[in-house]
Image (tube, rainbow, N blue to C red):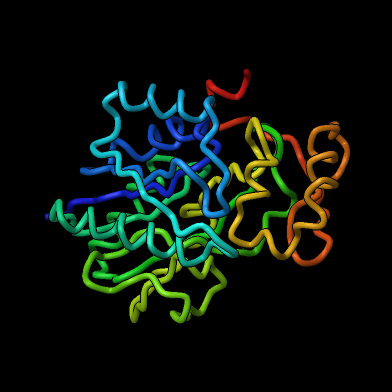
Length: 262
């Protein structure tokens, strides 16, 4: 018997959260949203995001909302780790056998996720990973070619903890790795995560409160200006240590995000 628990790490861009939940809710036995009233850097939750959170609470699509109080200060990785471990433990308390840690801007094709979960159970894997497709400005534009990066996908749930010292054989977010011996790395055609990283009403909130903001904080105003003025045919400019310019192509949107217009 399998029981999938999903824990969302939430602060901003909550206009995306309901659409993300809709893609995983058919497979999830338990969903918890671990949210913050204040960011890791001391920025308050916006009234707009608070309204989206209140609407979601009324929808009945989430089993538990849990407020996390961060330790405000330089960097954010320790808070990220604490939230992910908290979410995992809350899923363990519900006797889940499998677990996903997700951010609000991550969506999946439900049928592909079901395939991945079935593969995890059949192969007795203790972890899995897949590649991602990053979106720019709307669900109709993607980076081309896709980034060569992976996201941890589904874990078997146990007493392992998320820790920056954990190492994997594929590049992933360091706050999302559990020590694993049997990792199923899915091919892009099997499943990929649709990352709406640059699809949001306020990209500035994302950039100012990113755990990696120390790598690009001098570029934030430039990135925001490019994002707001961008027109089809131009390249995307992403946050990072180095200059990150990407080609963009139009696609038929797989997802409808009802809250992307103010």
